[in-house]
Amino acid sequence: MLATERVVEISTPGVALSVRNGVLRVHRGQVELGTIAVSDIAAVVVAHPAISLTHAVLHAIAEAGGALVACDERYLPVAMLLPLQAHHVQATRIALQIEASKPCRNRIWQQLVRAKIAAQARVLQDLHGDDGGLSALANTVASGDRSNAEAQAARRYWPRLFADPSFRRDRLAPDQNRLLNYGYAVLRALVARALCGAGLHPSIGIHHHNRYDAFRLADDLMEPLRPTVDRVVAGIVAEHATNIDLTPDFKARLVEGVMGRVRMEGEERLMTDATARMVASLVRVLAGDQRTLAIPEG
View 1: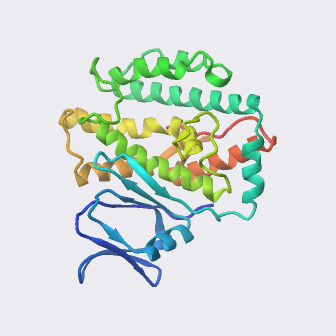
View 2: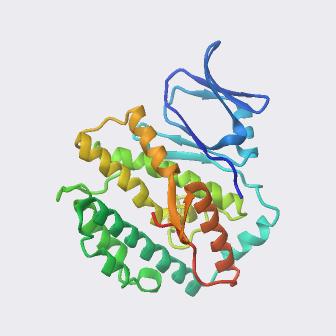
């Protein structure tokens, strides 16, 4: 199981990252701004173009099982570094992904969509006292989500989440979508890291098939976890309205929300532990040892 737990976000222009004796150093010139043991890092998020880092930093993070995410000015991930030699049976497990039958993939996607809609329902119920009919909709999800219940849920969910009938999920919009982008980027890195740690390849998806998406399996598995981010963003919007700059305080709240505890199999677990368990259950499903994924309640 992956033991590292920290997400490090670097967004200050002009700083540099280097590593020495297993310690990541953040510095500007000769002035050291902070340090952290590389072995404690789950992910490093680099969120400004005027940040420099050495090859040794990339090597050390990957070797320790961590991820590095590079974001653009909208906090959308544009690149990710992941460890690809993290498991001794990697070739066998990638073969399981490639050989998975369509019925198996459809069943997995059904479970993921059902869990996502159920998690959205819980967020709406907790925040607004009404789940918008999403609990009932979750129970109708068919194999492979043939009726596209995921899209039906989205049309009900987003306007209710922010109490704004005009709101749309738009990755390029200059509003609370920027906060969602950032939270999802962190979440995506954690899921992709867990996949690599289990010997799976994040680009071989269950449902997502965009040829330009290098992390299709990570995008599949993070779907039921997205409401964890949505809940935090809805709280920020309720306090500060929608014209929000992505300040360090808000970033910290998002990271804390993503890295916090979620309920899974009747217990409270840290997200890093929960994603590792979800991925381990996916391996068992792909191998035919069980039929049901273990999915955190986002």
